[in-house]
Structure formats: C-alpha cells, structure tokens
Image 1: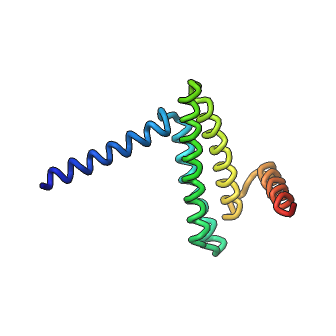
Image 2: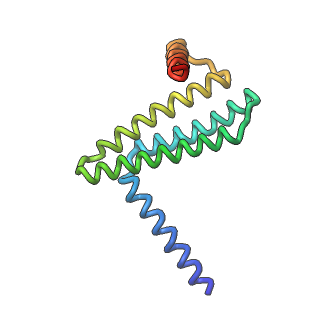
Length: 138
C-alpha cells in the first residue's frame, strides 16, 4: 500500500513538473537570472519593510501575486513562440523586460534600506517616481 502511494506522488509530481517545463519552454540562463532577481527582490523588500518599520503582509502578498503574474506572461510568451514558430522571440522579450523591472525594484529597495547608490541611478529613480505620480494624478 505504501509503495502505491509513493508511486502516485511521483507520478503527480512528474506530470506537474513536465507540464510546467512545457509551458515555460527550454530553460535558458535568462530564466535563471530572472528567478534569482525575483528572489533578491523579495529579500530586499523584506529588508526594506524591517528598516522602514512598515512590514505589511498585504504588500508582500501583492508582491507574490505580481511574481505569479510575471510567470503567466512568460508562459503566454512561450506559447506565442510555439504558435508562430519563433525561436524564443516573445519569451526572450518578456524575460528581459521583467529582468529590467526586477532590477529597478531591487535598486529602489536598496535605496530605501540605505545602501549608497550612484547619483545617476538615484536621478533616474527620482524621474521615474515623478512620472508615476504625474500619471496617477491624471
């Protein structure tokens, strides 16, 4: 009986992992970079919450939902590649875009933590912040 349960668990895990592998596509270093940047963003976000004394489970929950949304976009992009016969065109664009967004989020978190940042990066983040405020006021 125990062997049957273990075999069932292995079968289910195999099915789930192979389905995910098909949906995401062939593993590429860019996916590794994105996964690492996502993890760093989560860690620096937690540090930011600790340093600013604004730990909020709702913010963390939204962050995880956002990361799941990113993975869904990558799945959609991979399926578009399969549909059109493009070799990683849509997926590469999506992954590189999200690597850039995660990088900005990490840098922003580090700035809130108090890590010294180069002046050009601070200037760019301030500009992005002001543009975001202008769009929210419209």
